[in-house]
Image (tube, rainbow, N blue to C red; front, side):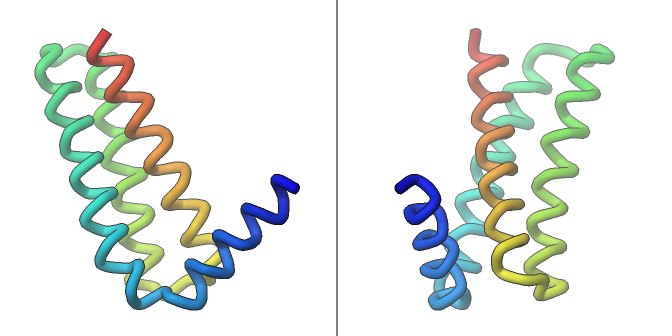
Length: 95
């Protein structure tokens, strides 16, 4: 059942790709910038540098995948990973 839901989400993303591109760029960029702000608010240490690098790399990977017009499935999973990791970084830096 879970597999069917994920496939449905990927199909929806593929069918309405041009609608989701601007929406997900805005969502992912806003979440990434919040994560970057919270990371930098902790100071400049090696840990914050690594966290900031991970945040920026994932955001750029998703944007590059959209610009390169990679397959929808790969682009979808890059979005999911980027959103999940940036959300995790926000939670870690809020605690």
